[in-house]
Length: 331
Image 1 (cartoon, rainbow, N blue to C red):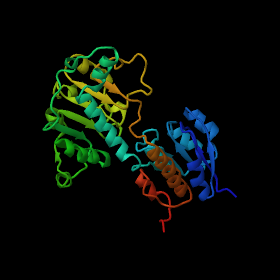
Image 2 (cartoon, rainbow, N blue to C red; image 1 turned 60 degrees about the horizontal axis):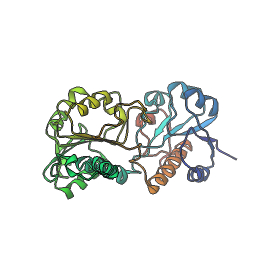
Image 3 (cartoon, helix red, strand yellow; image 1 turned 135 degrees about the horizontal axis):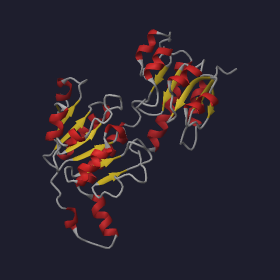
Image 4 (cartoon, helix red, strand yellow; image 1 turned 120 degrees about the vertical axis):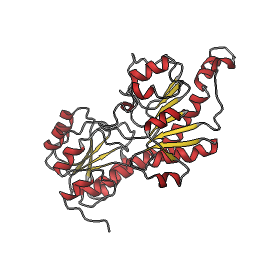
């Protein structure tokens, strides 16, 4: 007999077989849906004991409307689709998958840094159009000795910092939650965000999206950056004020940008970012490899099913919820 239903609220994956295997191990039934709105989730997932969520909004209204809901597992590191405060108040655990794509995202961030620095798309597009003139890429500066600024210094940016050593880059970071000694042990200097923006030749963003980090990179902060600097964002699009970024790129106040995420996804057809020669945009793919996708799907389903079964799990993001509910420690 099933312990209950775990719904996939929405998904873009070709198969949900990894999820099915994991939830059935613990006696649950997996039910796939394609919900886009909170009304969709309420209508389609009314008897859920847990949700596996990709993009559907899991609001207070949704959670209050699902009386059996115990857990929400988010496909990814960020949990900005879920109202964390409401979940905690209602005794619902919210989980993420913090460790599934560290290699992929750090590699993608560094690839964007290199591609923007060497102006690869401008040069390649010119050759594809029948021309052959290296001077269209001028100026290009030597990477050795430049300063890479990491906004955020968690798992992924630490891997970026490690890779930067191979290119003889000086690395600084801004992260108010990291100790100076911990950063120094990795050869990285902690600085203020303003100092980072003012001194860095390359800036890479690695912070979650919260009400405090939305438009963290705005017109005022872009103005602090060097006109030769490059900005890369592989975290969340709304960290950057795109209108301000477009102005800086068009006015020559910033040399280039590499974006894997945008404020609205997919990027609107009328976006001013389209067509700018000093911007490289990829479609939120930094997380992806075949191995990372399997890790994401398997871990999200397993962790969420365990919590739905009353077993504690380190992937719970809203840790304060443990004060409201009783979970067994894994044994």
